[in-house]
Image (cartoon, rainbow, N blue to C red; front, side, top):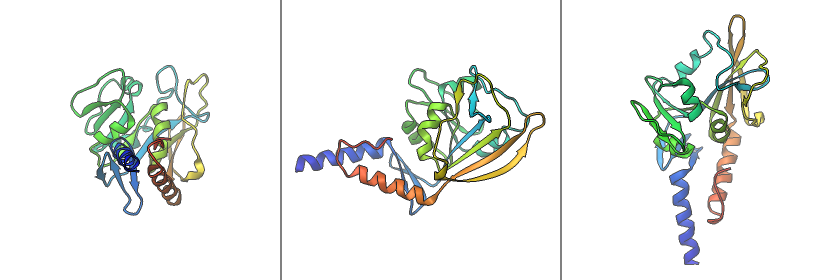
Length: 219
């Protein structure tokens, strides 16, 4: 019995060190035991057929389409994968840049590297955190985000090779925002996680935590 309790405590220490937890009563987040009042958001743009990339690049260039990205991320933290960072080619000014990579290390002014999403969240200084791609990071982060800002581009991209991951739209309240663009039109859509679903996820996570060391928090 004592051994089981010790293992359980050890497991919970690992949970708070490497996983993201939400206290839904206060609306606050815990990153490696550090309380942060900011939100976790995701920013993406996708075509009508769900493409977000082709041949290592964003397959469109629309004036004004990236304005929201700058407005949201300036003064906050941006987390992106290695390929997304290499496509940009430099750290973004006036915000903390965290690159998730296990194969390369990037360092510079307002630029650090993390080996995982969990480590990136622990390093984030906030106040808000935004996930900026690519596919793998989006897929891993979706269960944790509060809101997704997705620009729906009115374009079908042939032979796209990177797609936005599937997710349960019923977990979110969907709001269509402003539209723009000239030759290629776009609409900004906001997906806000439903409060009831967030509470259920928190409760399920708590059940997993207390069930024993063999249970894993990551989904």
